[in-house]
Image (tube, rainbow, N blue to C red; front, side):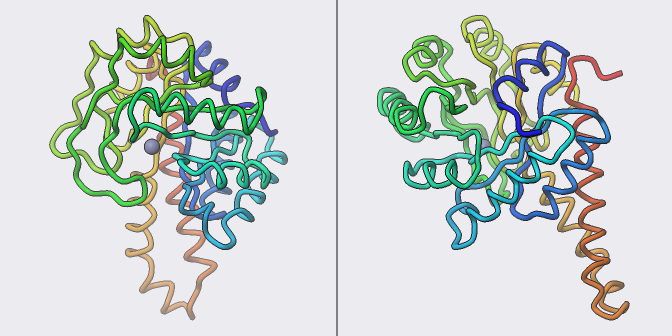
Length: 281
Ligand SMILES: [Zn+2]
């Protein structure tokens, strides 16, 4: 069933879980992710990249994901990820997204707040809005090695949340988009301080490459939504590379290759759901 992203994340945190948000560039991936969520009885978020939504038929994918969410037997939210364009945000919501990341993190503090307020004004009080404070290094759609950039300043968090009216807050605590240069280093002191002052659930982007134990620990510190993209893409491309010769030899068996794709996504999604709890059993 279609569900509010903020509510599902709060419920998950109460149960000692975080909700994974998987980037869906295509419908095959989304189907696989929802199938795993249903099998495990867990809520899930389908993320749509702004570059996808902005494609000529991108909004149709958003509508298709909305249908998928409505038909699912577990809570599903459809989010427009990292949006900086008010027009695209409005169109994506019209097409069926029920959450957006109004991303003003590249601007300064005041402009970031003003952008989130502008989007709140456009979408109304009921729409679920995630905001981001702090600069996350890297590119969401392409994985290159990154070092962490500007961390979120815990001293800015309470004021930002109160004034922006955001429902969830993405933070920079040593996480990056893409692949980590060396070992990921989470700044626990920063996360602990943010957790103490932040009244809304926290979001961790760029979770690919962060150890399961570290993800567990972050859930105990208020991280209720974890975005995954790189790991998913890596698994799918590796599988396609491995299977493509055989599938060609089978008479251009695209159906078989999509089955391989589905399996690769299901494997990563299953592993992700299992690791996103405060104590890994
Ligand atoms: Zn992100």
